[in-house]
Length: 223
Length: 223
Image 1 (cartoon, chains in turn blue, brown):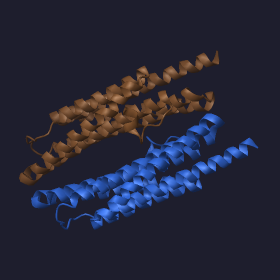
Image 2 (tube, rainbow over the protein chains, first blue to last red):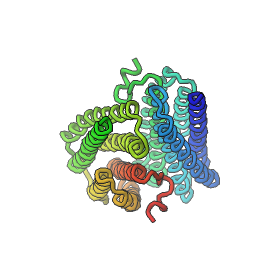
Image 3 (cartoon, chains in turn cyan, yellow):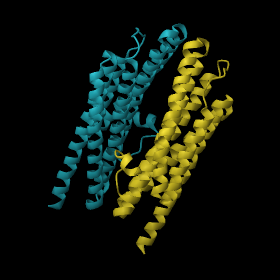
Image 4 (cartoon, rainbow over the protein chains, first blue to last red):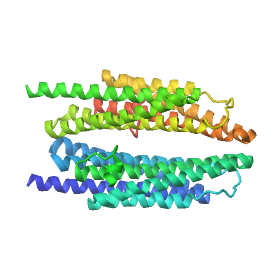
């Protein structure tokens, strides 16, 4: 009977984590929309959303700690709770990156807008796919889906490199656009970091399911 | 008797974490030296050091998991082990940031060198002080020292903002130095992130000692 209660609590913990994840995903979507549309209202929304993220983050952490302290879980349940704590941390950092993009957008409001050779919307979509796949892997306990996220990481790195190179040329050739191109480089880098957090989440899902630490042996894990 | 053995294991876990911390600190020192001296040999050293960091990171995590699984620690011991897992993650990310600085330095080798209005050495020293204070707080279990790290975070943010503003002016006024100024902005930002990880470590030390979550209520914690 107590074990049934414990597994209900684990299910509740997972639900709370998924609610936290929804807030983080929403933050990324909104922050990039705010950037692309130069919309101060959406920036304000991202700021309010961050308060909700911080509450959700604390709530998940506290529930995970309570379960560890009171239930003394073994083996796969222990690994699941530890994975939740780490994933929760990554989701919070995804929210932080979204916040940075919103702050950058507010700075850009002051200057006029230039066409830049960078596909921020495309990078957002790709990073969003990585987050969604990582969460699907968590939801379904599917290590193969988690591995697919690890494989996607190279592509976002490539997109970020291309963005940086093309925008550096803009900075050199059109100094009046330098500030804006620099901000675009930092937004692209933020999206690459968000994708890194998705990769961390996928790695934690694999650790939960298989009990193996794949963080420093990604190529082995993908084989 | 088993409890004595358990506390010896906790002490060993702390030692392993401090060894991990030494590797991360060394990585930051070396990466910034490599950047300031444009020294490819030191970059190579940072790369080799990263392999050691990854091994140490895995070792600490595995020992922490084993202790959680086998000893089912309560209250303050549980919080300590959870803090170790989180601090270990931050130390690994400090190592990642050092690696990025080394990679940036190798890219810069191709171009000639310009004088830039930025105090990277000063930022490195300040971030280094924050890491040392956070580790001292961990070593001595001193929440007041940990709080001093939280207070230092504003200063490194300020240094990073000044660096970004001054270097953006360089990018606009001296397009031939744009690439180098951009890399300097990213190195300054890397040091600011390293300092953020020091702040995270300090927060985890406070959580361990006081059992309070100060992450989203820093101002309260400092009062």
